[in-house]
Image 1 (spheres, helix red, strand yellow):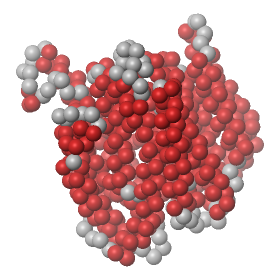
Image 2 (cartoon, helix red, strand yellow):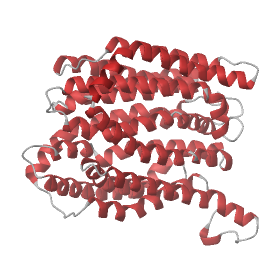
Image 3 (cartoon, helix red, strand yellow):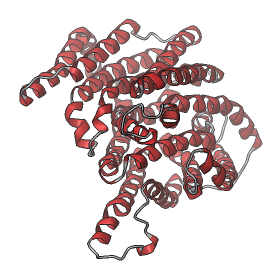
Image 4 (cartoon, helix red, strand yellow):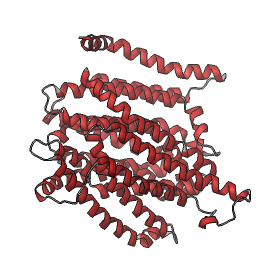
Length: 500
């Protein structure tokens, strides 16, 4: 139980930065939907999906590789840090320069004619992200959770601040005649441009702080460390590419696969903006998973040599499923007021019905992260590629076949379907090569029941607003009470053991 408490405390601290910070960032959707056009929202959705893909290429699995080799018995953690960071600095400069030069071609290919500057800024943003990855990982490995959280929150606060200045404050000051049109080169017709610039400024300014807090660094490429790390990380690169395909392919391809006039009165890019805005609401689940991942990845590796680690992993998985199923229900039944609160312009609410499916998809992603520990600690990362590739293929097939028919819902199903397939495959091979005593039957039952209650609570409406709110939220309490009755003996056992 002490191990679970340790993981929970670390998750809480990382959650402070991830949930609080990203929640602040999440509030930007109010600004974007209120001040920007649906076309700008569509551009934001597509360009940031591309950034998500390229982020994997720029870091190519080195973060996980750094954790693995820094905790090795015969390696100096400092040398591992120097080598990993030196490699990423070198490769990021090469990849960033290549993307910068290719910006005019990329802008035409993605149907942003005359806007090559968007992709030049993207190249700089990706370079900053890559050279921050290993210093942030080092802070996590050294259990400097408070410093990590502070840096993340500072970065997000700067990003939000720049967004508010560029998208809200400057137009207001120009309209009121306080500053002239074109002040400091400001262009009123820009929208997505200012989202990118705000992100770029914030990431560039945080680099010195994070490098300072991560500790001393010197450029060093040790071949005795480099080549084994490279061998370990290459499958993770392909896994990452396949994984990000699963997560982002629907947003990247939406405007290109949706038939013209599928939604009357909306261009395909505007419809992509609606889809992307509703996808953002599902980030509430992803925030919890990200916080859990920050704490769990180094925790899992450190506990991998313990004799009872399989039982510990099973307990963590079970607790994760219960908590996230409750969260999925809580968000889904309250979408009727959460949606209008964050999506400020008319028209966005027509995509709300996809959010429960997206929440379930992200929950399954968290389940997959728990399951994937077997190939990470046994160094069989080649399985990660094939499993994630299967999910990517499923994602592409689903979106290609269902988006032109079902629109928003077809795109959402690609997220749910691919993570379900990945979970099934990862569980099957994991039990074969590294058996973990998961409570499989209970876990599946909780997930299915939680998903059914989520959609039921979303669609069921009562006339009186107060009664409707009480009824919907009572579903959370009913599900929680049901879980408690089934888990009562196990919970009491944990509490007694902890007292001893």
